[in-house]
Length: 272
Image 1 (cartoon, one colour):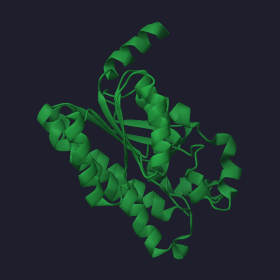
Image 2 (cartoon, one colour):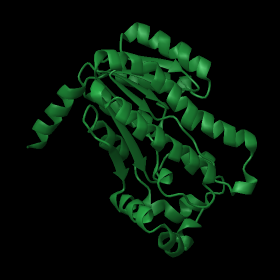
Image 3 (tube, one colour):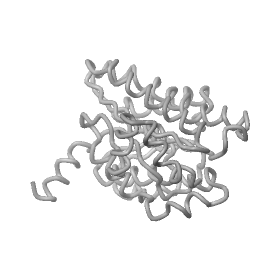
Image 4 (cartoon, one colour):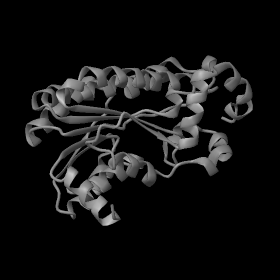
């Protein structure tokens, strides 16, 4: 199929769809919003930074689509319920939810602060579940929808200094896989996105020393590329998106031969 026809198919698939994106103020969240707006989707942008959301909203509204921006900290479940009720009352229903909000901090397990541990689980796991629970009843009733959870290769391959972050992403994958089976008879798609390191401000928090970024910079994914892989698969029956492919192959080998994989990869794993 010629590229022009591929674009037309994707454009028609997302045109006039209502898409909610958490963590939309930057990185792959903002890039996904740009691609969805280009394809004619209406957007709800959620993040803590209202200034960045307003700037993105102004940019996207120039493309003739409806854009709603709301400040939301997904770790606040009361706020999640309030904001989603307001948004759903305005747009009517959600066709696609992208749970993109999340953060990580790389520390040895014995150095992890309890408040930091709690915060990571509140944002990466509980917040994701809370947002999902707000759109699921409508999707089940409509018998259509797509839940996309941004997980991580860290959810498949745990490495030193990422014990807490990996644990949150393991939880996301477990939740996603269970949810997929629960809603399979309701016309709802559920996809996990498992990228390796992405060149975003995620590492401003996760990698305070800059050591990890320096060591793996040449392997880092660009946010525009990751966003395109996700948007291209919206409203399709895609189980997982694993990026890059060589890292995905590594997670398969790890599942089959964990002891050998950990032994051989020990040096690479300790680059944080």
